[in-house]
Image (cartoon, rainbow, N blue to C red; front, top):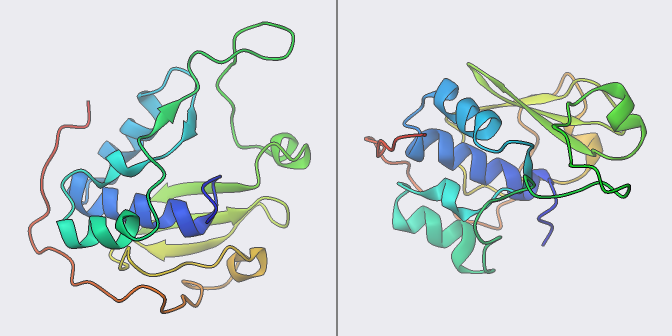
Length: 169
């Protein structure tokens, strides 16, 4: 299973975090993802599932082992020994192959950008079932498509009607 920024890993975590840990508050999720680390994230992890029903946690991490906790890259250094700096998603980063995928949080959903092919992507609505299996095929995320066809590897789980509220700071 891929953990390095692929939609199959990041979308379930981000959707579940939005629905449960951040109770549908896109601004709180964005603040956590953008403001929490000084530089950025090395990996997003299962701590984003805090507040999610146990059934969803088990479906997302229980069967295959999860990605572990999120980890920041605050203490990383570049090859020349200088401290790492916050990276932005622009064409130069995508063109250098540093970033393969980007995720843009919109009020209506999360846009998945396959940076090797496009500077825009497809949007997945925030209320999408996070237990769906999302494709990692770049073509599935090219602009103009709605939620790419998901496979049915994971059984759908009804979402909690009252998400748990957790402070994002």
